[in-house]
Length: 417
Ligand code: FAD
Image (cartoon, rainbow, N blue to C red):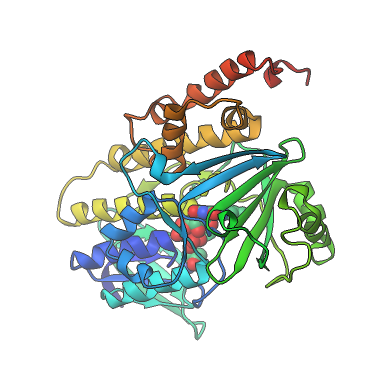
């Protein structure tokens, strides 16, 4: 039976960042990946904060060599209202740019660079059973010849994303507190985009804030366009090969014909019910990272940044534990990751209840506040000196209320249900 130091389940951003960091510390690391790469994955607009994690894991230079679209900000729109954030104008001292990526290419590049650092990466190998204890972890996986293979590791990092291997096997899943939503999306040819639209993500709220649409431009002239809303609506847009989706995209007034006469690169894909949590993020001999922990909502493009952040933190603590240190996984891992998730939870809540829109579409927006919100949108959700991080659970509602009074707008929380 093969014996290794660390097994990583899944070669997405969480898994490759964790494995790459640990290989750099000299451990024998194996990644088991169910699919063969390149493979499609959703999650295409990155946040500047993830550049730090890629750099620390030694993966940034490999990605820089690829011709991904540079992203310097984000634009929010509602009808004729528009608010643009630029990461150069943010409060936290951090990265001011990142990329929009086709995940098939991005994840393949991360995987190849991770292999180059000495990680054994086995594609088309699906983890089937895992039993964990303080000292040794026993794993069984199915190889490409459909045989069950045994493996022993000192530690397991579950970065299996939507596969949620350990939450499933160890019964750790917890339902999300959000209304179940879904998304439908495709990649479209985009010959008519303006200079502004060719760089940054555009997010349009519509249907009285019940739905929103994203446009994420890529460097090859195509753009990812998706619609997010409650599941029934997404199901209706998916019927007949996505006829409803296509009709909205072609006729959406605020897109001004941008996609009215273009071709799709692939038939629209739909994902439903992706928001889910866990009862705990670690246990004897294992830790969860990335989407295997909790995924809230795509609205602020935070998923990959949480994957790289938690993958890196998990790897650093695994290193300390394998060096014989007594690691406090609850305090130094789960509580830290949870703090960041909770900041975004407040912003996701603020998006769907309209507080976020009241603030960003206000007639006048305080530039200091805007910079602080911009840092949250850049992924710097652990900067406790930022009031929009520290007081995340009250500040949006309070500020929105003040703006509504000032602009004499009705308060939606007072309207009859
Ligand atoms: P993944 O990227 O899912 O990688 C996990 C890997 O594990 C996969 O390759 C899978 O094949 C493998 N695996 C699964 N099961 C097994 C198994 N049994 N054995 C071995 N391997 C296994 N995030 C952003 O940052 N920006 C966005 O713009 C964005 N948009 C989104 C839009 C939508 C509609 C949704 C639903 C999500 C979006 N996200 C976005 C979130 C993003 O998709 C995820 O947060 C991100 O991919 C998580 O990375 P990960 O490494 O944790 O997992």
